[in-house]
Image (cartoon, rainbow, N blue to C red; front, side):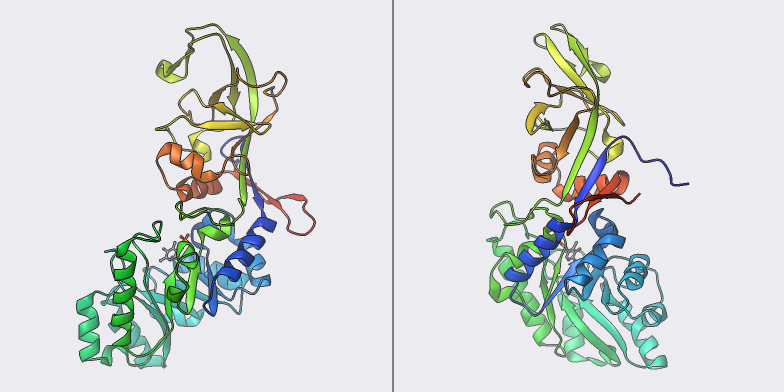
Amino acid sequence: MPEPTADLATLEIDLGAVRQNWRTVRAQYRGPTLGAVVKQNAYGFGLSRIVPLLSSLGCRDFWVVCIEEALAVRTLAPDARVFVLHGLAGAAPADFRAHRIIPVLMDASELPRVQAEAAARGPLDVAIQFDTGLSRLGLSRTDVKRLRDDPSPLAGLRIAAYVTHLAHFSNPVARHNDWQWRRFRAWTQALPPAPLSFCASAGVFGPPERHAHHARVGSALYGVETTPSSRQPILPAARLTAPILRVMDVPAGTEVGYGGVYRTPQPARLAHVGVGYGGGLPFSFQRQAYGYVGGLPAPIVSGLAMSLMTLDVSGLPEGLAVPGAQVELFGPAQPVDILAAAAGVAPNVVMVSAGARTRRVYLEPSEEKLRVAR
Ligand SMILES: *Cc1c(COP(=O)(O)O)cnc(C)c1O
């Protein structure tokens, strides 16, 4: 029996929008190889639907963070190339060979391990990440100097890509991006030639001269804006809704929520909605946040409980906010980045946690009809 889902919320995933976003990114990207990042169960959208869809659109490269995810992609896309961004991540080089999965080496200490495998059983496919300015994963400047002076640690390795990741991706004009690009070029030019992978979603909408050979695109496919400074022509692809359970009229001065977090300044009509932080929504907001009923905003006035929140619907037309009516927390009426910004978090924080915890329903790209997946 499937485990019960967190609450009454539903995450509606529009596969047609994902398809359109893939085409938009494909048209925008000048490099030869567009790959999809499908880590965290395809950002909460579900690997089992997203990988076949993207494969049918011509995607042949998938990027994940661990070998378990890579094996799941391998099953869904037997001919694809699958990259694991966190390097060997606890698995053995032989496991990568056995399943034709490519580790993106993220530390110099991984080189002797893959080389031992290559020496024992023949050439091994790897990618190599460089830490050009994020101070996170990848070989350092010192590592690169050592390899330039003595490239023997690369013997037996077939290098599928050199990879780096931007620290200031959300600001396309940040100087830091120029430095990272120049470092990436200089460092990799000193090493055996291999295709370069520089761009995530924001990069694809950035300068074409930096598109390089491989892009690793996640957010844009799922309809999440990662460059707030330039509106991207991408479509929202997920919609989180939950029903109104109960509507009540209260007098001025009524305390609402745990600890009386809100006190009605005047007589108000409240609507209690069946979703809370347990459904992946932020626990608290720094700015006023809204739920949308029939396309109109109503302020969220309580704090969030595990499976409940309260809207003040006094300002809505009569008959709209009634028990059973669906409230949209994000989707076409309210892009996920607006709700996330009210909570002071990145849109993917909300998207991934909602996707992990909420019942998903898929809107098919062709027939445009609903199908319950879990
Ligand atoms: C998550 C991730 C990406 C995808 O980034 P988006 O902004 O979601 O497109 C690309 N590269 C690396 C290294 C990542 O960790």
